[in-house]
Image 1 (tube, rainbow, N blue to C red):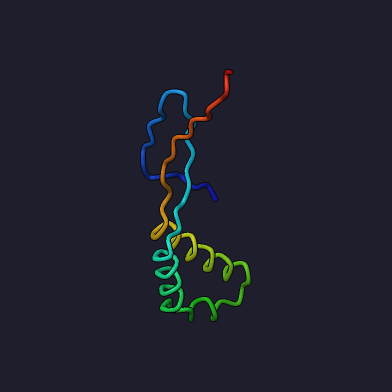
Image 2 (spheres, rainbow, N blue to C red):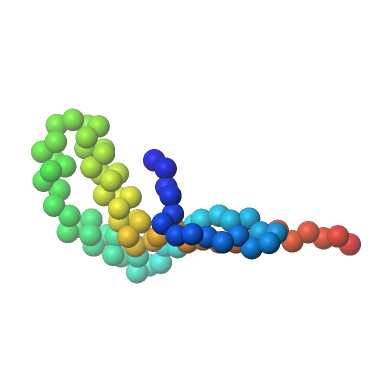
Length: 82
């Protein structure tokens, strides 16, 4: 699965761009609540294990993107020229 950020990130001079997720305790609680409230009947009624896995992973990826979206980080590596 290719994850493409929905935002444009501007690279600062001399920096490297990378993306990360910030999982706060609030985000983890919200994800857990949605997992508890999710209607799992479609998952349990599916007899194909691959389709069950697809349902599960799509749900997890959706919730992670919703509550802990990717954020852009500019990283500048400091070197000692001394």
